[in-house]
Amino acid sequence: MTTLTYDYGDQMAAVGPLGASGDPHAHDLCAIHTDRLSVPKGWLVVRHETLRA
Image: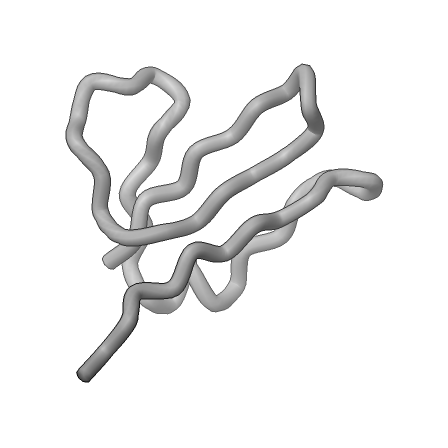
């Protein structure tokens, strides 16, 4: 699972490890929806990957 956060002003979406709840702009996604994520044309997607040992 990952958390999606977005910023309309900066036209940016960020996907990363599960975050703390309470942010109205944060949405938890399952693996399928993380892989299928699409954003509006012109938006930037930043993917924060966790390091695995």
